[in-house]
Length: 400
Ligand code: AMP
Ligand code: GLY
Image 1: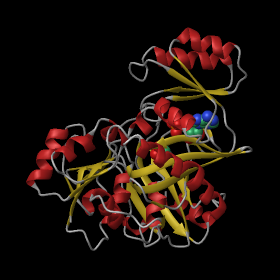
Image 2: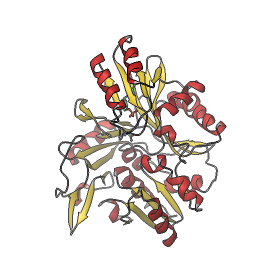
Image 3: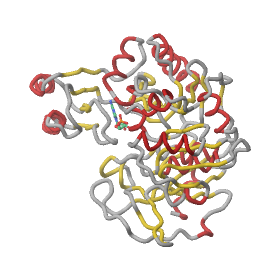
């Protein structure tokens, strides 16, 4: 098969790396990819927002299947656009991608189908939201409805912070908005749970947890994720069964009933509280950097599963097999990330770092005239595999 992957992050490098080993693969392209993907695929320098240009490329190069990495093109309807032109694409359509594109859409599904999630309120004006805040105990969580690149969630310890969050959201910090979501603060262990779905059946992947705060010791600003590990110790087989029956199955049923079955990768962000499992969010694509630990552990063919879904086939329900090891990835970021940072700094990645049990995934990198340069906040993700989390964590941190 000739495959094109849309995106340029560590997640896309990890997907490319996994797919590059498939016997089904004839040729791999990354649009636009990064310096890391250029070793295993041909990078094509197109904007992922330019759907027409992507279509022309896919037509001219006779691509069999397009895999969409990031959420933005999914929420903007790239799947609908390409499918209308008879191109096979892996990812949910625009309507279904609202699961990630609108937190309020997700909350309403959870409420209607009894899927456990934090108690919430939706407010149409800042003054309604502030009146509610004045009557409510802190901490709580204020959220912008739409995509906000991981920045639209405010965990508020006091009313001053909460009012500031409401004002920022209504003042358009994350684009024009009609409402704000205010949620109960949940306490517990988090995990990211991935399932690949064909609209009806699904297969589960290994569980993972990412490290959100920028600094060690869980301090500093929230980021897209500074590292991740898999598997998660709280994810016992009982808990996995509970996730399937209480969260994944009802969510898939809810979407199917609404004539919008989920085809693609469903990512459930979960928290295990004293009163049970709750959904924090749904995403409609692989997590970054969780993918950099989940896929290196996976033993089954990812391309086989993806192609089955994109071609309208049926998955065998169950668990994608994984080697019985642990994986930890450490993100190497530009100074200043997640706020402002410099780009175009020359870096080197020593070849001897890489081995069967250590993979350096590129994220914000580019190559210019033979030089390896930084091009983003998260630059590399260094993944180590070992028999235990602590050994993998040490190997990953030493290599990073
Ligand atoms: P999200 O952008 O929805 O992934 O939220 C970012 C992060 O904020 C999550 O990974 C959680 O760590 C935290 N978070 C979101 N909602 C809540 C909540 N209701 N209670 C506690 N933490 C939350
Ligand atoms: N690591 C969080 C995400 O991919 O949304």
